[in-house]
Length: 126
Image: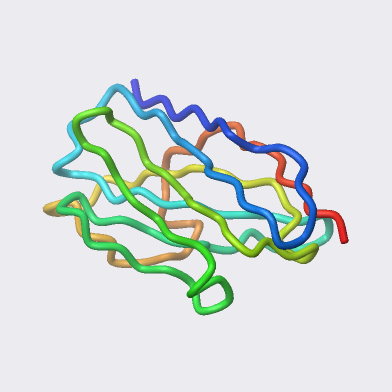
C-alpha cells in the first residue's frame, strides 16, 4: 500500500524559506515518478516539480530559480526546498507518485499521478 506523508509546511514572511518533505512507503522506487503539486483556493492543482526514479528533476517555470526538488532514495523521501517565497506561493502543497516504466516522469499532469498525500499548508505573508 503506497503511503505519502508530507511535513515541513507552515507560515513564513515573504522572502523566507521552507523545506517540505514527503516520506514515502509501500513501493519500489525504481518504478515510480514522484512530484510536488500545489493548489490554492479557487485554482486548479498545478505541478511544482517532479523527480524521476534515477534522480532527474524537472521544475515548473513559475518557481524555477527559487524552488528545488530532490530525492533521497536511502530515506525514501522527496524534498522541496522553497526559497524567496512570495505571497502567491501560498497554497496546499501535495506530494504525489505515479507508477511508470523505469520510473521516468512522462507527464506533469495531476491526472497522471495515482497516489497522493493529504497535503500540507504553506502560507506566505507580505
